[in-house]
Length: 159
Image (cartoon, rainbow, N blue to C red; front, side, top):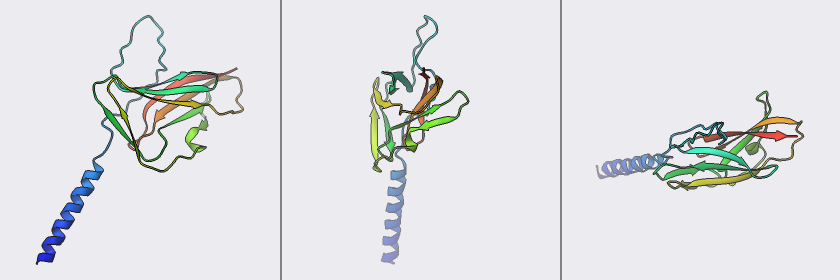
């Protein structure tokens, strides 16, 4: 009889721990931002949601930034050393390069914290590809365990 009660208590505790472990996730809702940060008019646009942007720093050097204009701290869980990914596509929508398909990442759990009015920044280089002159689509996004978030898109021009 005591063995049955001990087993029941053990199973109840194990189940409780399992549920508690499953409860860790990002507090943010997925957002998609396809604006590359440029505005066509003189109007001032106030962004009030977490969003991603891409800016070109040099010929092949870019920075992907996740901005948090809210008053909330947001936590992201990651299952590897990868924090973001990016693709380069042609005008037909054909993917020419995906960074995660050619890179390896350390397999270790990790976390990033995005403070209120804070940002996460990641610099990356477009690899040397044999691209014809033209305009390509560069897309980047955050890669937490909950799935892709805060997609940002911009143009990549090859002359």
